[in-house]
Image (cartoon, rainbow, N blue to C red; front, side, top):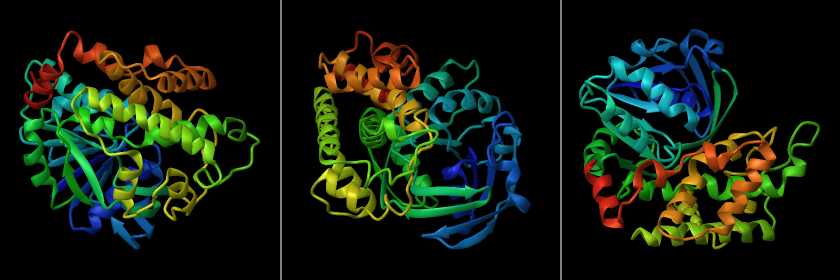
Length: 361
């Protein structure tokens, strides 16, 4: 199968190398303005260590978006969320019927990509989906050298519109690195994104320890106290309550994380202080201005908060996180992030929302 990976970060390199190892023809693309590690990968070769040990040679590396997507059966976006829509706009003139575009850790991106597709004067008949996260816990220690710490056991996927989900799952089954399970909609999927539960809480409660001149620490086992775990639990309670307003019975954060890694922990504190996956490396970010705040707040938590507002549920804990993250990073997340209620749901009832998510109109 011809597969293109858009994005040359940790996850993009890991996915490109692993799928090559599984027998697929892989093209790895990076935007010429943000090439990342692309030019440091020699002879198209990526070496994997950790859970998968192999040296693989990709079919192609490129900064030419037309070359990257024109012959691909499946296109994975492995990019920061803010780059999903701009990169999709670059891809759109070269996409052809029956291709599948999947945002890894979509963070509601399928809604925005589908709207962009429908506004195109001559839209190709393509299929669009989000997954809940990357299939790996991984780190690229240098260009072309990636450690796969763990491969997740299962991953949720949802298409936009939702009636395409079974078709996309069937097409991806032979190539995706872990088992896929269907979410009812991109709304349910987005409400199950786990990164915005743990990352912001640990970042904010450890803000004084993170940054230039500060000693690196084990982000999870040293960054989560019992009190921080209680804060994470309060945030998760509000997420679940918002889901209930839309008729969704969401699993708890801990249930999601245990499912990813095959654990059976009974508390958030125990999970993060004892998880071998999360504590194999320190994983401490070098700065407060990292995706743990600059992505997880405006592209995940703000959408949750806006959904709560639409359903007349006030999450004070989410508002506090968004305000604090904005102040710490010098950003204005309330005005610059994804407000799902304003962008898509104005004046819609819950039944109308579910109809739109399933049928696209």
